[in-house]
Length: 135
Image (cartoon, rainbow, N blue to C red; front, side, top):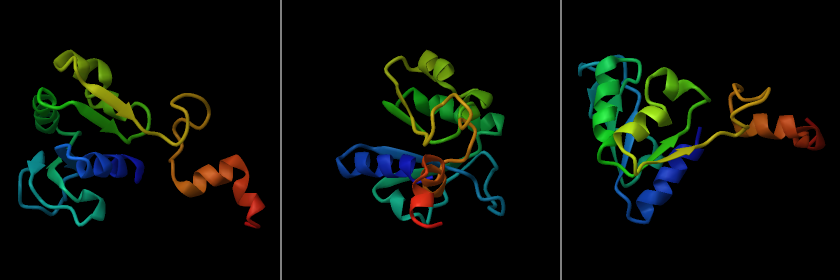
């Protein structure tokens, strides 16, 4: 949950122009595919933000338009999420061949834990470290 936003924060701190794509807030009066509501997240420092639904065809079209002008995509989702939305590496590299597609996951992208939610407690439990802490 924090690895992607933190990586973007480091890039922004070193001078990169970072656009954070947030989930739209359902109660917002803006269109469901895009709005410019700020995030209260402290990891959004020095980042621009736009709320876009990857479940909406207009949102997907907007992201594909933005990809023409970016250098790096940081994918913090479980395997297959962006592919299901039509925003996987094959589609986006077809739009922008210079794109660096960084995928962040706590577990491998294949194997029995690939679809498991990745949070610190999961990592230390699966590795056995949690049992060493008396929990």
